[in-house]
Image 1 (cartoon, rainbow, N blue to C red):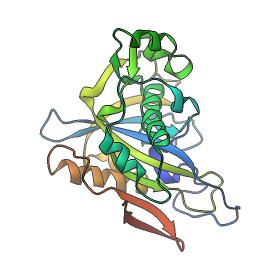
Image 2: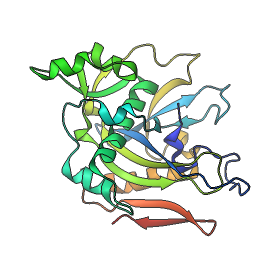
Image 3: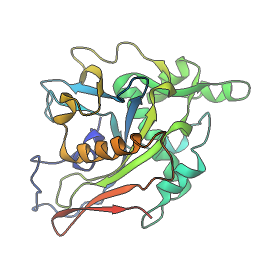
Length: 254
């Protein structure tokens, strides 16, 4: 599992310090999914607590995420990503082609299911039932539930790239979706010996979120600001966090 809930800083050697003794590595595509519950007065987001004995960020709260796999390009879906989401994912230079945009959204759904047991999908009907039967590997929980992954409910919140000089670098897209998009829960994914030992829905601004990585907090602040304006929209500005001259820059994707 790649912990892209830490976004651009997943592979940092020392948190808060930029290593400069490694050769240039091209960032690999990754995706993070922030699930939001807006049923109460204050929105809540789903975080998972990492095992105390893992090497990277033990005991910390994180969002599910990881790098894009080859199968993410090929897996059948219940619905395509929306044209608006595809357009947002295409922003930046060079432009992201449609197949790559889809793979990013699908990776976010797959990682969320693998790490939390929560599946964003839709029941297969008619001809799509044959497609469900072909799901395997990481997608078997969807097949067992008669689901196809459904990226149509996703919104792009931000993009972030790991600073140069790191052993591993990721070009991470942060997605969000409403909790109502959860179609199935796989039991037994979260337990005392798993990488994530606990799942918690926490209110924005609460204590568990104060201990997140700074880049993750930046993204969460963007989400908080967008939620404060009402329902999420695809036409909101999408920030792009990257490093230039040793300093973090924030641009707006266009």
